Image 1 (cartoon, rainbow, N blue to C red):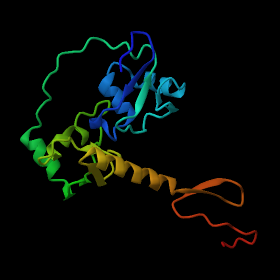
Image 2 (image 1 turned 180 degrees about the vertical axis):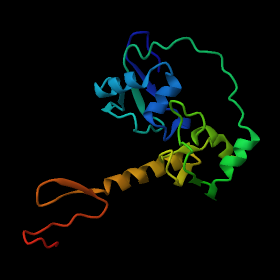
Image 3 (image 1 turned 30 degrees about the vertical axis):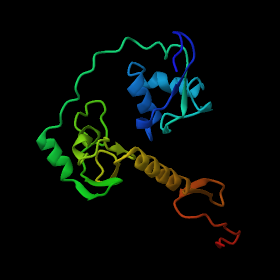
Image 4 (image 1 turned 135 degrees about the horizontal axis):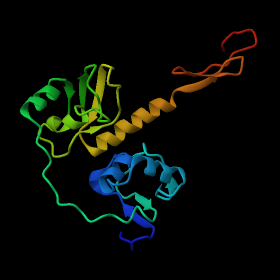
Amino acid sequence: MSEARGQVQIRAVSGDEAGLRLDRWFQRHFPELSHGALQKLLRTGQVRLDGKRVESKDRVEPGQTVRLPPGVTATPAPKPKTAAPQLSERDSQEIQSLVIHRDDWVIALNKPAGLAVQGGSGTERHVDGLLDGLRFGFEDRPRLVHRLDKDTSGLLLIARTGQAAKRLSESFRDRERARSTCRSPSGRARATARPCRSITRKGRRR
């Protein structure tokens, strides 16, 4: 849907954007909008998803609508499309050498310490920039669904389709919800990955 310049605009999420983080959706459609500006729009409720307040980490699904406030809708003239840079054979072999599992839904990487998951200030080499080497014949580009610190080694899961990204993201969210917040006898909150049990005055658990 298209509105005149300076008016509120409602845009629908397309089918190929399933599971995309909201901030990534804005980067795709409005690359000139800074991260800080987007955060301010989200905090003040000027950007909404299906009429509800959202955070930048929330993921969009096909058919949902994004409310865009005046200013954001004033998109500059489109730039000529340029072909995406091709991944070198060396880079493809390097990222493929990290694969320890692959099926039609997910790829598991043994990420080494020192390799960043995403780019940032001063970071040019990262997993996100090497994902084209993990297509293995699939048309869709693989998608990140969680992160590991640059200096952390471990298992990194990559979704091969939008539907897989959605399900994996939901699994990670459910895992976070399962972390209960318990309170000690002093009244201070403490986080635990195990179910909370009440503590009696004698210090016994029940």
